[in-house]
Image (tube, rainbow over all chains, first blue to last red; front, side):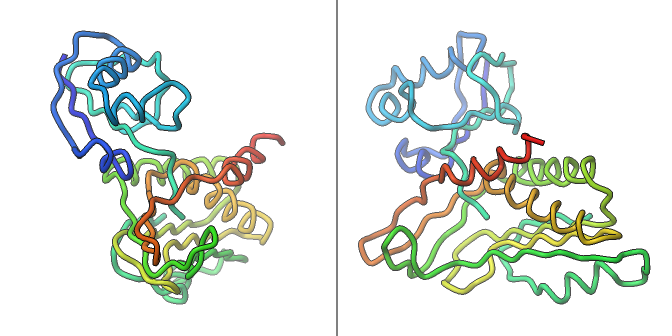
Length: 83
Length: 151
């Protein structure tokens, strides 16, 4: 499936990319994270188990076992700090 | 209900006046204004830049206001959050809640701020004499939001 990926704030800077289109052979957020971690470097470091980050699918925060659908907008970002 | 994300500043008095204009059923308006400080975590802060997730931000803020409306009898709610570069002393966020009596207005205003801090996708980057740094989320903010689910 094709995913529209977005990265924000500190993670955008660490990854060196704000958005990309990604072709995923998988079904869930956990599958996607495994693919991104396999890129190594900042990806492996920031998305490692136990690190604090959030994943939103179509603009709602979800758990790692959440399913993904073709064409979904998936955002990965640090815990929020507004207000 | 008014929910706005903007780079421009805002005027608390004007927002409260707009809220009560032409109506006499409002008995209480509680408001909160968050300001950029010149100090955080032991360092001077000379400026900050607020980034957000366009689209999700508006959805998240609408949901917070819907949740507050479901919980209390509210007559109107205004939420304004700024983005972009701000200087110490600049207003960042405004929440104003109108209701018939003060209890609902006070509680809903605090509820909306507590969940805005933990749910709305905004991020602050501070400029300090030691360089720029992203603000880390605080556990005390999670605790503040969590207490609303106890009762």
